[in-house]
Length: 211
Image 1 (tube, rainbow, N blue to C red):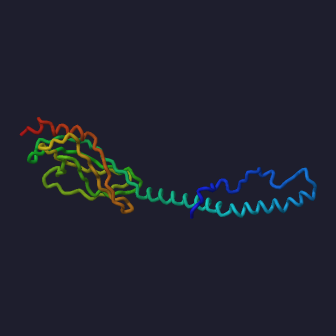
Image 2: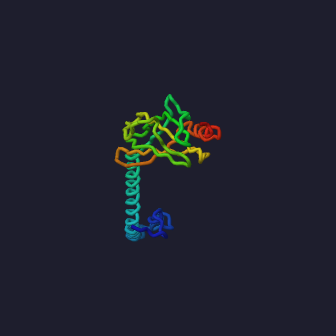
Image 3: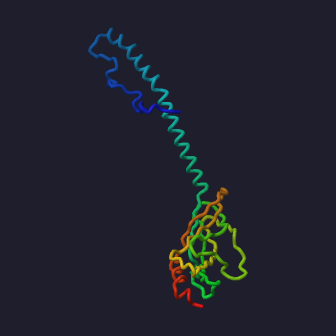
């Protein structure tokens, strides 16, 4: 449905004359008033007939727009996910052990489901120069996937390696891969408290030169 851009909807039922002057002449006699009646009625009917299509379009557009907004908001609410990551009691540390020329950073992280429905944590990815994920200890089995109910926390320990040959000044970015209750899969960027400082310690010349 297309509207004429030169004919605003608000002006459909308006005339340059005030409505109080529509073919009414209080000074005229009864015959003049009677004669004016059909003309006034005819002009009113013409206006109503001309205005009805555009008024119907305006009403339909308003109803359709409201429906679309409701649908979009409902989809967003059903698929909304909010997962944050925090450090547990053990915190984080730069370990003494090395993997080749890489320093190891251990993070005692926990994941918190802050959304209105359950989510499944499928894994964690790291992005950044000189950064990679490793196991927190030898023989560690994978904890993924695991489910978190709304408001529930779950242990999600992480271990990162910092390549001393790269010594990137920027701490890596972490993403948590989740599946929402409606089956939608997402990658949520998370920030780990204290990671910037741990990364800085792991990539100093002193740390990289330690045996």
